[in-house]
Length: 118
Image 1 (cartoon, rainbow, N blue to C red):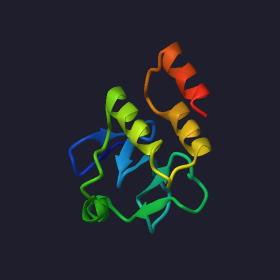
Image 2 (image 1 turned 90 degrees about the horizontal axis):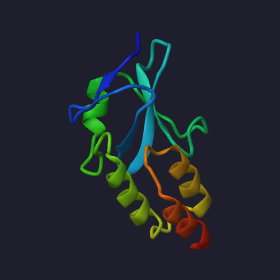
Image 3 (image 1 turned 90 degrees about the vertical axis):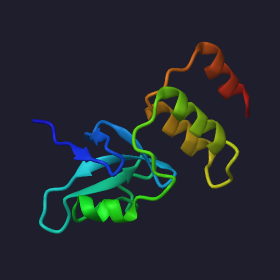
């Protein structure tokens, strides 16, 4: 049976879902152990020591901020990417990798524009 987590906004997510948490895309990873129930793993930086562990759902509720939205639609992820491309906190390589993982559909024209934008 697939494990799920109910986010503070009410979305039920699995490890396959991508969520927007504190302005960045993450996946939930359930942890086998006594100290933490799950962690949020950033799409680009996952498994690099930047995963955020949570003892339980209440700990996540305590850290859920205004720029956390949970799951987004394809068009909402596209909007997030457009804004992130103008944010110096993100590198092109990071955003290119994130784009490949986000649940968005890009037309051939959109892919060409992105490729030649550099």
